[in-house]
Length: 335
Image (cartoon, rainbow, N blue to C red; front, top):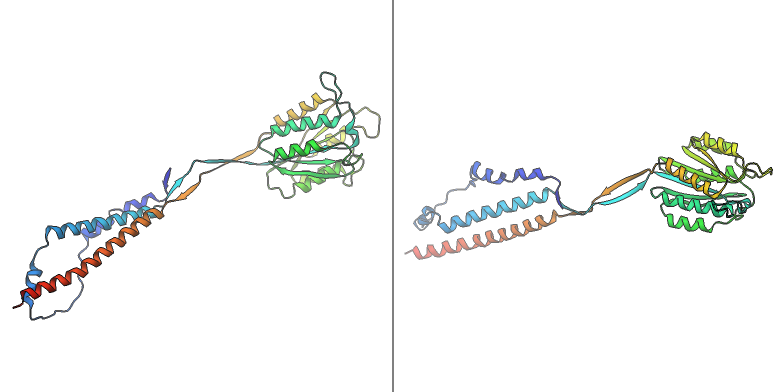
């Protein structure tokens, strides 16, 4: 598709013709010259233009008008627009923080058919499905145990993220749970983010027993920085051990940041939780459309320049031939 940026310039197309017919002819000032052979020039001065000369004049005018039209076409800025290219720009940075403590190896994540599965295996399966659903989000990954660390920054490289998620193992970050540090690392990861929507999905099966940053204080900072936190407690709260799931703290963290808290005791319930989060989190992306543009103004400029050069050469050749013909005619008329 060819588009002109300034098509209104074509309104100037008849301007040279109007000037040619409306303005008086230009007469160059000159001094009178007396010559002894005035009679020799009399016939040339009084003779009328031949039909051939009139034809050449009309052709020259048409050529000049064509050059003018080509220059106007170039000034109208023609360009070829290619087919539109669509680019989806995510407007949300989403981080999955997954507990990798030793307790995640407990094989009590039963399925609907009664099979026992380690907790981390069930979490990786559910998180992988969730990543596949969130095609429009930039997703990052944080793992935590004794310490929290970033496994992947938020990006749309979901295939790479799936590979990193598949390689996570229980105990690789230590045996304990640094819940507050996981929020702190996420805040650090999103510190340079310019996305208007930021979300953390924090999953754990225990309580905070190793963080240097208190989870409630971390949640307060997250709220001030516009980070929403959904918490998922995966496991049982009635184990009677020191590392039992701390559901009240998870609920408080979510409530302070405008998120929601969920509990899941088996793999089926965990997958249902991720599906619920997906449903309540709209796909927030901006569609950017662009069309490749190729400038074409140089084509009429090149043609106009060529025609102008030919016209000047023709005028130069004509001006050189006329004096010689007049001189020969004068010589023939002299006695």
